[in-house]
Length: 349
Ligand SMILES: [Zn+2]
Ligand SMILES: [Zn+2]
Image (cartoon, rainbow, N blue to C red; front, side, top):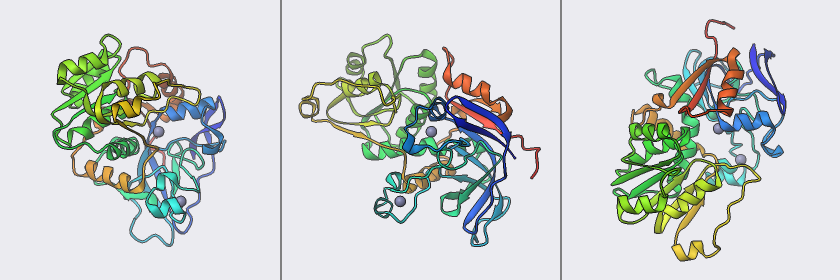
């Protein structure tokens, strides 16, 4: 089968590799589409810490496809089922897994990082991470379940109450998803903070009631003009020290800040050490997602409560992967949210 393979930092190619073998408790899935994520670019650049990655690797931790084979122990999935798979593969035996914090599994394993992912034509995944997709849910929506699970994870940690004023910093894929999910809580205002006019326009389409261009406007002052005070809850999705700073500055005293962006190991943020006490603010980070959160996101998608299709802005055939990586690396002024790679479905087993 064909697969995109990252052999090591800055070494990537599309080539023929062995089709993976389906074990007794596994499902072999013909991958339809795989999302490209900033982390994939970091994998290519060799910027992901060693403990999370083992080269050579087939990337693709956001993906969906069709069941091609089921292991002998798998009874409730069948060939031809459309499915989506968690990227994280929790062991379900360790202390953290038993507590439900599968994102902190002590036996870390993840498709596209330590196991072959959705950028290969076929992927083997253990049965317990695979879930069926209804007919009317597109594979592109399936691709976005993974990033949406990361978003819902942080939102669940700063749990907005109905009628609160909420904010989202950064309107890429994660921010666009955050706007859609936060809308479900019935906020009195939903403010999007971004640096490009295009992305702020997009945020309004996704359901933001107000937008603040932080490249041109003072975020704190503008927020006070809109609300008369800071936001109750804010979610940072941009992955930069400035974005975290914007979130900390715009939340009201006693508010909650959720941080999920990854700015890179060398990024530093300096804040007054009395910030937390003086502002009486709760600031929480959220790493990845749990199985339980993943299932909830799938519920939102399957019941039509969110529509992720418009968030896919660019599509490339797998053979044009280098163009996709190039766009991810250098997006210019264009509004680029999710980039999706499509496998050639005319190729059979
Ligand atoms: Zn990702
Ligand atoms: Zn575990």
